[in-house]
Amino acid sequence: MNCKKIKNALFERLPLSLRFLIETLRYWRSLCRYNASKRTDSDQRKMQYTLQRETHVIEKGMSMRTTRRGFGQAKVLALMGRLQTYVEKYADKPFVVYPLSTIKEYIVFQQKDGVAIPQIETRFDELCKQVGVQPSDLHLPAGIRMEQCDKLQQAAKGDFRSLLYSRHSIRYFADRLPSHQKIAEALELASRTPSACNRQAWHTHVYFGEDSHRLLQMQSGCNGFHDDIHCSIVVTADMKGFLGHEPFQCYVDGGLYAQNLINALHYVGLGSIPLSCGFMSNKLNEMKKCFHIPDSEVMIVIIGVGEMLPEMKIAISTRKDFTTTNVFHT
Ligand SMILES: Cc1cc2nc3c(=O)[nH]c(=O)nc-3n(C[C@H](O)[C@H](O)[C@H](O)COP(=O)(O)O)c2cc1C
Image 1 (cartoon, rainbow, N blue to C red):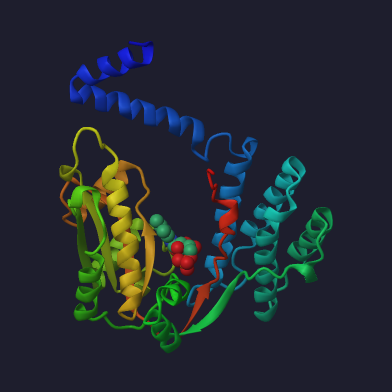
Image 2: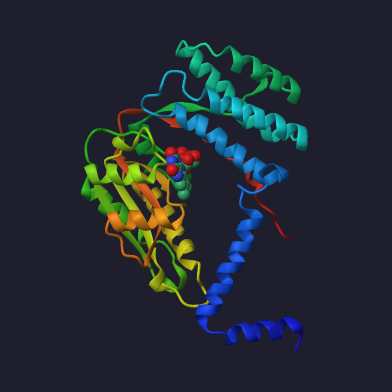
């Protein structure tokens, strides 16, 4: 037996609780190495992901029902500062085209609103010059656009491609509760999700009205629009469904279910927005306690749900080309 095999055999003989502890420590080691909050700018990928996130914050700001006049100026200046650092460090022009396209849309947005932002405009022009792009050449779809409810609902009932391309995160809704019947139909469709050994360890908890608002206020990723979302579905996965060799499988099965539910909600004609549960355990435990979610269930995501208004703003959220995220291992 070689060294690795002996090590694995010994590991298998340890009590399960000790193996879990070792697994947790290994995860801790990966977190310390790879989490984007640590040594961010010295790693190109970490820098890209965080810049992508900061770009989204700007487009998300524009996609609210109402925006504070002149919102986001400090954030845009900070983003431009980091973009400059990125270009100086990594000389990667293609990556910055999308953030720059978003900033260009932000400037147009503020101009239409009659807000003067000369400092941002000057800084933007300087940055474009440094990167070597003309602002007029920034053609990537960015920022926001208007969508009509009937068009989205029609597209959702088209083929699979049409369903995927017409689903968007929606951050404000009609001022009425979504129909129980539609939610039930979406839950029934989402139950077609595959799961490891067909265990179907997902659960859902649906809240309406004031309860939904309180839950979303606690979630805090929808500051400024939590009162506009009158229904929330918490998707959880039950840790009791998984064995010793699959300590993190609940997140995979729960995540697959959540995505199917999001698509199913779109199919039945409701608007939705996934809202993060990627928080530290103290916050999640408090939420579970307040909203009567069993301790054995891990919170995967909260889905804000609503009846769509006739017309709404959506953030464009342009996707990366799949060739930049895929490797064919031929
Ligand atoms: C797991 C997850 C968590 C999210 N959390 C938030 C959130 O807290 N606040 C928010 O406004 N949007 C949130 N979103 C929505 C994303 O911003 C959105 O899905 C992304 O920009 C892509 O846009 P699209 O959904 O319109 O295609 C979340 C999405 C996912 C998948």
